[in-house]
Amino acid sequence: MTPAVRLPSRPVRRLRKALVAVAAAALLAPVAGCGSSGGDGGVPRPDHVVVVVEENRGYEDVIGSPEAPFINELARKGANLTQFFAITHPSQPNYLALFSGSTQGVDDDCPNEFSSRNLASRLIQDGLTFTGYAESLPRTGFEGCTSGPYVRRHAPWVNFTNLPASVNRPWTDFPEDFSQLPDVSFVVPNLDNDMHDGGVERADAWLRENLGDYAEWAMTNNSLLVVTWDEDEGGEDEDNRIPTVVVGERVEPGDHDQPNNLYGLLRTLLDAYGLDPLGHSAEAEPLDIWKGDG
View 1 (spheres, rainbow, N blue to C red):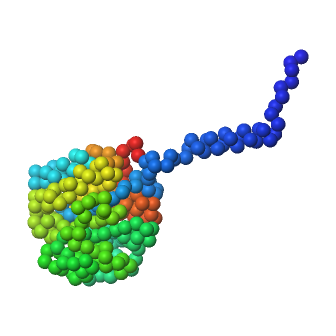
View 2: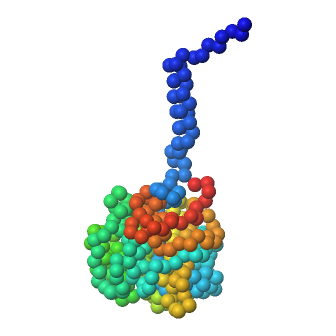
View 3: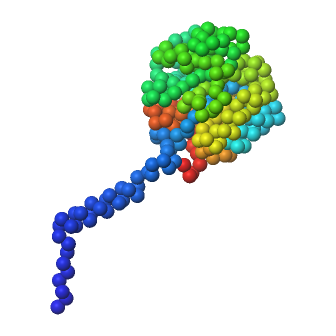
């Protein structure tokens, strides 16, 4: 006769199942400190993000242009978004869309005041930091519509009453030690240096001189530089496709043809820090431009 097989007792079988379940959970759980990510969409969480907004140029006016050698250098080192679009015309609604997920129903008037949620208010609410740096802003917290080549309509954070005046700072306050930057910064050059009045070549040179070092630093310090535009030039044959380049340590270099827009860029920033979408950014996909080892 074949000897009877003795099965483990019920308590022992339960213990074994429990141990297998614990082991499986351990294998599936993320390892602390390895490739931390923000919220939804697999967007990695950077230590710092600097977003620069330029003016009134379509994609083909900049990408491939000999007048923009630095921007094209960034496009080769980082992600060049080949199918990226503004929301509307004229300028100001696009800045507001990128900052708050809504054009807020405005045209190009100034001043405006809003109390709705926005990128900076959500960051601050979660204990994170934001600063907007505007070239030619005469002083911290200035609320005037113009000052020389500075214009408030290109600095959307000034319009939100739920933000402290201290987030509105002159470009000269941008730290030389990049590790001291806020979590997220916006940079708006003045009208002479943002392609509005001064042209592509001048704006490209300003970017190289003022943010070239940060671009190099970001590529080895888990940070991002985003250079985008508010809108194209608005001609009848234009489709509001704008240049947008993202440079950083965890960015996959090359051309990226995922269709997206300024709402998608906002969604990306919010996802990176685990924050809920704002306004129309909830309808957009985050940028899919990240290295696979994140």
